[in-house]
Image 1: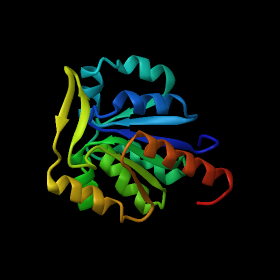
Image 2 (image 1 turned 30 degrees about the vertical axis):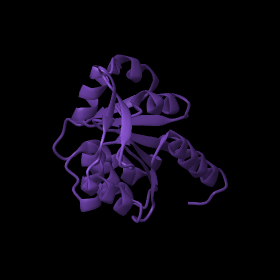
Image 3 (image 1 turned 135 degrees about the vertical axis):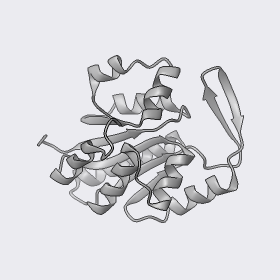
Image 4 (image 1 turned 90 degrees about the vertical axis):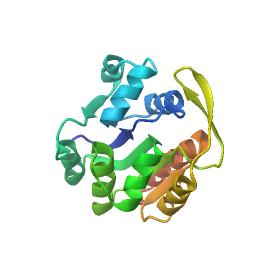
Length: 183
């Protein structure tokens, strides 16, 4: 078991503030990355080679039906789960209790193990300007997407960040909590 426990960071199939999220990851100690199949595709689309990420972080990919790497949560390997950027699909699955990807399974099991989660949700506002592989694009999240983000905010041990500053603040608060022995 690694000492001290680490951060488990789940990447999904979103490019929304992906580069900024990767910058945050690079500035944190002891982060392991968990990638859905869609995340691996999106990283490639945004020109981020897995080889480069592997030089800095342990990477677990969604290659098994039972999400074998989730077992690390049971052994105290992780103190926090961060998912971000999180697609509307991932947020909806988390809200509905569906755990059919590595990242949604991590979220479900983190909750069952009482490991706090931070989710950087992509769809938080009626209009979102985001980076796409070909340039900026304006998106209009559906009412159900906004509703699912709002519902996720009510889940125990879950903090939802709506922007990069909110993600940074949530991570700083969690790390401060750990340094003062609160859970």
